[in-house]
Structures are given as C-alpha cells and as structure tokens.
Image: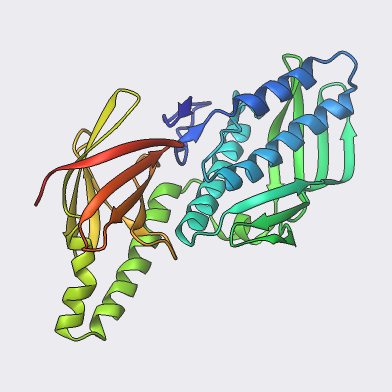
Amino acid sequence: MSTNLQIICCETDVQLAGNAIFPEKEHNEWLEAQQDPNLGAEEKIKSTVNTFFILIYESRKRGVLLDAGFLFNLDDRGAYEDYAYERGLLFLRITGERHINIKLYDYRYHPNYHKIEMNDVNAKVEITPDADIMYSDSPNMINTSAYTEYSIALVFKENSWLIRDVFNEDEGHGSIPRGIDFVARMKSRLYDDFSRIIKLILKNKEREEKEKFLEIYIKLLGKYQFEAQGQLILISFLMKDDILHGYWVAKDEETALYPIRDKELEFFAILDNGEIYDFRFKMNGTGKLVSVVMKFNNVEYRGKRIAVN
C-alpha cells in the first residue's frame, strides 16, 4: 500500500514528499506493544520512539520511503507539520544515496536514552538513535551512525503513545527550511548538478568523442511498454539538452533520468509527485538493446521497445 496523496489536515496543506509505502510489519509490532497490558507506559513510549527511528534506518536500507505517519498525532497541526518535515528530510536522504549508489546494507540499532519524563497523558524523550551501520560499498566495515540528539514529545491518545513534536539541531534540520517542496528541491538540485557535469564533459571532448559519448544514450531512445501485475505503463525516452529524459504517456509528464554511479546503463527518475522509478538497460556485445527492466515500489516491470524515435 502506498500513500502519495496530499493530505489536508488541521487547516494546513503541507506537501508530503515522495511516494511512501505503509510498513505493515513495523506497524503491527508497534500496535501489539501499545495494546500489551503487561507493558508499562515507559516501554510503550520507547516502542513509538524506536519504531520512528527504525523506519528511518529501514527506509535507507530498502531504498524506499516507509511511512511513519501512524506514529504521529496527525490531528494536531504541529505534529502533522513535523511528520511532513521529517518525511521530507528522509526523502532527500534516500534519493541522494540512490544517486551516488551508496545504500545502507545493514544496521544494528541501539538507542541511547538520555531522559524520559512523563505523566498520564504527556511524555518527553531525549534520545540519540545510535546504530552500527554498514554500507553497500563496504558491507564488512562497521560505521557509527551520525545522528545527533533528538527531543521528542508524545501524547497518550486512543490508548497509544503518539508523537506530537520532533526537535533536532543537526545540520540537516538546521539548513533546510520547513514548508518547502522537497521533491522540487531534489529534482532541481539533481538536474543542475548533472547538467553542469554533462556540459563539462562535452566541452573537453572532440566532436568524434562527443558523438561516441552520446551514442549509447541515443540507442535507448524510443517508446517502451512496461508490464507487471496486469498493469501496462507507456514511457517514451528522448534526448533533451544532451540528457536522457522519460515521458510518462498516461501522466503527460516528462522528467530527466539520472545515471546511478558505477552502474552501467542504470538510471532513476523522479516524478513531480515524488514517485521514483529505476531503469536497468542491457545491451549485447554489438551494442544492441536486449532487455530493460523498470522498478517501482520494489515491483519490477519487464519492458520492451515498441517504437524507435
């Protein structure tokens, strides 16, 4: 199940970044803890806080945005805006990690709780969400997570402890303003950076080298049909400003495709609604396209070219 709709809440229409997947396993485990009569309030508070951070780590590990909305008191405007902001920051992070092809390979979460204050209806937690983390490019090397101390306020509502405020003063929270369109920010930054790199590469090449450099992209152009689970998606690939673009026919939307570092003929694209699509092309020894796969929300769509530009 995915949630990519704009939600109007508490007289605010804050944009939710990305296409988020509902984490059924983590939700059910959290709900079971909240409903367990043998657990005290402190353990239930920790269950909410730990699930919030586990979903951050899991999103980075899986390379998809997992929705933590069920942990927040979304009837409260401040809580909703904090949820939207934290979701936006996570969207920027996992998209950036996808671009440079460095994904969390695994992690061991061991939070450091500094303080827990609570009464019957309110609680405040100070925590550093520490973890030992391993990255995909060096899975045997253990690193320490770089997250700093958080202050999280919770409210007891409908027999569950829900987050109503998240505060952190790290570099990410301090440098990115609230209320921005996170998807537009990421798309703009990626396009500007990649366009600059392409111009520098082509500027320093002779004409013959330029043609050879662009030839591999030209071989991918055309109209493609992708199919999975009975669903068909039509996408046309074209060149624009020396950058490969995709045009989603049904959505009437065009966007750039960005290469994934150190992955030959692998790209990803971001639509305006935050949906992220991965593409993997394969050519034979003579340079003929033999297969293409599109991945969206962890579902692979097999594709075929049905027309050449």
